[in-house]
Length: 128
Image (cartoon, one colour):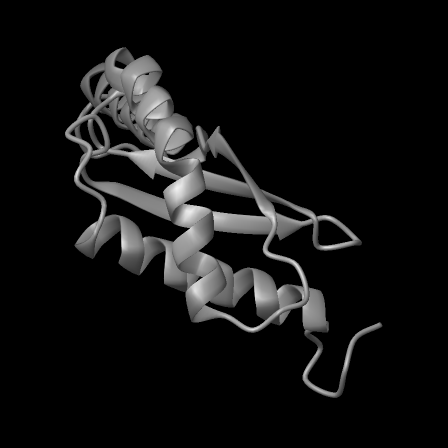
């Protein structure tokens, strides 16, 4: 059920989890496999027992396997740190999922730019 601002308690907690995890990963996680990542979203299950943590990385998809392995290896530490930072009945199990939307968006932008360049070359000057 949404409150007056339109956000449910679960949405607010998911956002808090996203912020706290991002800070722990940035400041405290020492695994070299987990470089610079951005947490794009967190989705909590109805019972708060599981959290899908969506992330993106500038490292590219060729490093995705080692990056995921590093995050899965650190999941216990991250969950422990999360439990110290937020006050909820149960700290959720963390499930990391690569968010392909940024990579797909970059590919689409590149295709649009290429199509525009081809169109511009094929149109005679002075015509649109």
